[in-house]
Amino acid sequence: MTGAYRSESGIELPAVAGPDDVRPGLDARLGAPGEYPFTRGVYPTMYTSRPWTMRQYAGFGTARESNARYHQLLAAGGHGLSVAFDLPTQMGYDSDDPIARGEVGKVGVAIDSIDDMRTLFDRIPLGEVSTSMTINAPAAVLLLLYQLVAEEQGVPGAKLTGTIQNDVLKEYIARGTYIFPPRPSLRLVADTFGYCAAELPRWNTISISGYHMAEAGATPVQEIAFTLADGIEYVRTAVEAGLSVDDFAPRLSFFFVARTTLLEEVAKFRAARRIWARIMRERFGATNPKAQMLRFHTQTAGVQLTAQQPEVNLVRVAVQGLGAVLGGTQSLHTNSYDEAIALPTEKAARLALRTQQVLAYETDLTGTVDPFAGSYLVESMTDEVEDAAVALIDKVFEHGSAVAAIESGFQKRQIELSAYEVAQQIESGERTVVGVNRFVTDDDEPYQPLRVDPAIGAEQEKRLAALRADRDDPAVRAALDTVRAAAAGTDNVLPPLKAALAARATVGEVCHALRDVWGTYRPVEQF
Ligand SMILES: C[C@H](C(=O)O)C(=O)SCCNC(=O)CCNC(=O)[C@H](O)C(C)(C)COP(=O)(O)OP(=O)(O)OC[C@H]1O[C@@H](n2cnc3c(N)ncnc32)[C@H](O)[C@@H]1OP(=O)(O)O
Image 1 (cartoon, rainbow, N blue to C red):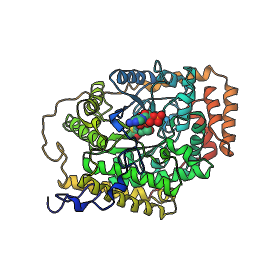
Image 2 (cartoon, helix red, strand yellow):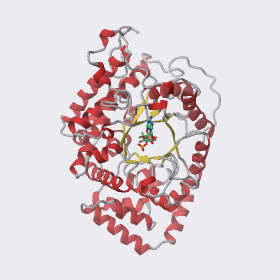
Image 3 (cartoon, rainbow, N blue to C red):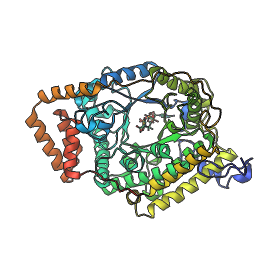
Image 4 (tube, protein in one colour):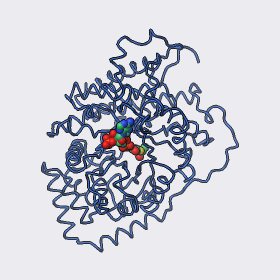
């Protein structure tokens, strides 16, 4: 390589960093751990009093199979649950909808109704375990099903802890599971904030996500800038809906990637906390410190895993996870080594969890807080990532709002340009990917991927037919009419949604009721 090393975001690294690389005023930029601007972490004691939450994302096939995987993960020492839903559920369609054919139970679990949700959490005490659900456009619907099942277990809403992803804006930018146009989607998000503040006060109402943008090619700077810009949009919407920032913002959470480029990643996490604290205090007038804290989940970078020599992924994941912990993550998913090929096998899923257990229990990482504080290199990179991200957030808002920028295709285009550059670097050999363009071998061992049983679609169809034959249909129709009326007006839509789901309306039926009023989003293709 010639010339200075440039980071993933294009920041030049000094070959040897020294005191001159750190700008004056470091103490004020750092603060103490647990204090504004939270550069050193959101809690004063961080992992010295409690390690991060080990939360492995899992789910496939039917509710029964996924329930078995959750029991395995908890028995293996996992701390919290993280549910992956299949595409039809994520898009608000029932398993027997023609559009769902071939996709039922593939990338996650199929959930059609309260009956499936009850099975999913069978023998799991919802008052004790915290559960994350990666669900966006229909997040309110799955959250209400969870609440209904918890109530059946005798657990009141006030005791429930967990997170819904509920971040529709990044779906338009990178992930693609949107249903409604941006504006009604934002209204549904604000309704969910309001409902949770009253009914589920310990629930994290959103996981504002940069992970998927990173997987699509965003640089670290783009990842945090576009994510924080989305965060601003959510806060603005909720404030305009009459909610108090000090009340709802403590339950906002974030979700980022951890790449193998560990130093820049640590700088990224620290910069993101600092920028968000300032935005909340200065732009939105938050005075509650909890409303200024950026708490986040991390997943190791799936896009960096390779199908060639898949065991090497174990090493990559360990390095990525190390960066997340050094950056002060609240919760972590470490990918399985076989994820570039298929859904993780049970063995691979266990090894992935073991990776974080080694980090937590065999290293000295939990003995001290923010060990990189004062590092010439990491402090200077934190400043540089911060400056570049703030400048990019300003660029987003030159479009008027994050939504307007999304509608113009701005973020998506920037991310695609970054992805193109990386692809070219791999192609030319300028960027090394071990086992792919260097250190290649012909003798990869055969690997038996986990396959989802194709009969699952038919099985779900049968369960749905039984449900529809065994419920009070006029009551379901009346409840769906009430959902439509709330969606057309200004009342919070969650209470009527809950009533419809309790009457055993399906996920697809309630989402269709909302589609009737709000319509569906059609993306504008730019190229
Ligand atoms: C790729 C894929 C896809 O596309 O499909 C995906 O999206 S997968 C996406 C998967 N997404 C996820 O798994 C998201 C996970 N997110 C979360 O779990 C949350 O949003 C989170 C990031 C805020 C982490 O929440 P958590 O409950 O695990 O952890 P917390 O940090 O909130 O800790 C739990 C409780 O312990 C307390 N606590 C923790 N540590 C300390 C400490 N050192 N001192 C004092 N208190 C502490 C917290 O205040 C909190 O209590 P209290 O609550 O009372 O304050």
